[in-house]
Length: 312
Image (tube, rainbow, N blue to C red):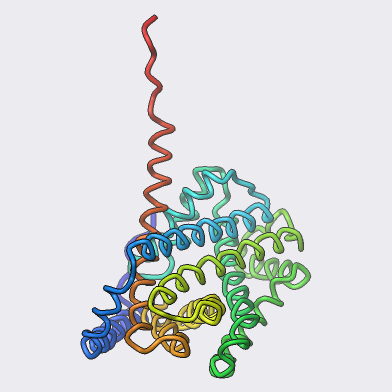
């Protein structure tokens, strides 16, 4: 069983970054509080529910990315067990350290006869494909509405697209084989195919579309123009997530993603309204994690409940 990791210099730096990000965020909110409070009051309750529903759709599509990759590696799972593994393991990202979601997926997957090394490979591939598809989603949307942002974050585009090119089976299968040889682990029994990776990529694009809708509902509710804001929210959220993912010093991209999203929304919203969108987005995504985890736990408990026998 894994033990709780000690406080290493890198982990201490990460949490120092989180404290600094929270402090800066608190200062920004305090400085704009009157306008922020007014914007919070402008949002209709249905906007909160619609935005949360889009988060749940995004989480479901994201789970299907992982499920597609795991199937391509040789361990197909029904949707129910896959959802249970992914949604419960996702809660590990709220613990100190970045390895807990992967460890949780390995252990939960093992209960469904998924080899741990295969779960680990699926987790790594999922992370790389999500990053590459996020860069792609930003690349095909942002140049139409925010050319300046495309140039400013060009390093994210370049790295993400390089990763996306590296996910072609002709590149990926030899790379995986080398990785497993270096770690002295058995190589995957089933080589990845273009069809398997393509299915995962399609689900990843749906994930970004749903996350974009999640942010767009909030932005439109605060007065952003519908058409421009939609493209900006889809590409802007994807790009902000990629920037947070690549900021390795920040656990779960804390602070980086939020500030990047604020900056990217400024063409359609004033600063207080953009702060509200970023704040509510972070909150609703956490609520979404709890909702889907609660749903799979409820579904599991319901299946285990014995059916009452009627006297007859």
